[in-house]
Image (cartoon, rainbow, N blue to C red; front, side):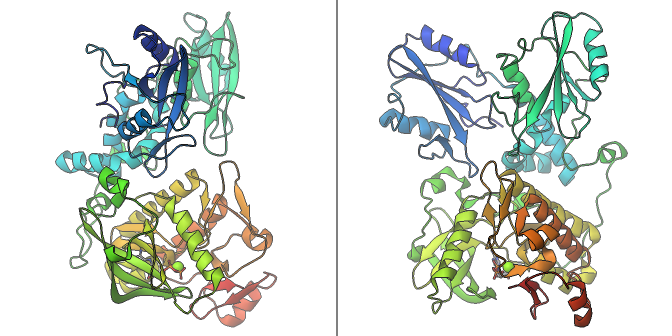
Length: 557
Ligand code: ADP
Ligand code: MG
């Protein structure tokens, strides 16, 4: 898999700021001279280095959630090439337009980063273990799966590094640093006692220094008050160039005695035993359920966003033209906002099946309209294979929210109607996908607040997506919970105690709802806490604002 910038003649790959400045100096320091390099901090990002008035200016280009690229405060672009082209015409906040590319000398290749050399192997291993694919099918899956998995895999890449020593204590770290030569800058990274945090131990003047690696709420790693990184190995690479508060820069790795260059990296979510014991595929699902075991999520048209094609992305707008939308009479579902209808949306190159949430026309109630706009605003920011994507909004005879189609409908209904035909492995597979979708939400600081089997929609028997973002909230980068001012019409049976008692919602309370959803799934569409109404009154006594509706959902009002 190549970097989207790899064909640009002014892209240098993984070089440092100092090296970039050196290249620009050699090329003459003309005003508007520029080059592009890989960002060492954020995954998939770049840095644009530009000369103006004999000075260097470095702008970081972030890769956004929806796959677009932008310089902080600037417009989004569908790729690094488009971004550079844009700034070659309009400075739009930069010190100057990009005038003259600083070309990479023909004999120098784009410098690969540490992760690039590992990435392909790790992706291959992940796809082999998760999807049980080999050969051609595996290669195909890697091509499709890679963008989403890269981040997941990058977060465990440090385990493949010689300097990573796993869970050893401070004394053992010191013992390992003191064995053999003790040059300044010899270092190792180890897991600390408290799970999930890391420490860096290093040698300087024959003394060992220990630093805690901070891990903030948004998942970034850093030295105290230092630059923040998406992953541990990026932080280490950076500290090899800049001390960032350490006594000296990192130089020589203290190699883990158990390190082997050929070791299989651990793969998130897959038990190691699967690797060593060999894997037996689950029994094939009965015939007649439409989808063969081999049809994987990435084989479907809704795995990637319809806007993943750069041509389509260029035309992406929040509001869709009514003339491009055909609405069927078929109703897929309904709610108090109105109903969800089937339809087709015509794009430039293709037509896609869509589900359209139509606001009732008599619903002149502004509050309901606002709610739908809020739901759209949340969905607009999300792009993940295990989440129902919004295609756009359409304001015509009614306000309409146009989404990807998940034709097999809600998980609870599907499971209860197909009880005898669905294997437990199949349910595990679907719930694993729901967990991947929820992981994405947590990583990006969203709380769902209405995760339930009724809001997990199926594309087919083996592909689930999370839907219904009507109650969802964005937390902002450093908040970790949302507090509702007052209780609303809430699905109490899916809520953790702190939601009910303190109106406090976080990824942790989403985990609680995931637990209830698991219960629903593994009881093949059963109703949680189903007891006689008389008992229900007793069980929920003391819980404020709760009531039951005829659908079996306990809603608080
Ligand atoms: P509510 O906020 O009223 O719960 P939902 O977003 O859950 O609304 O949608 C209600 C119903 O409409 C769902 O249970 C489902 O049957 C149908 N539906 C919603 N979105 C889709 C979709 N993308 N594809 C297929 N059916 C859908
Ligand atoms: Mg719903």
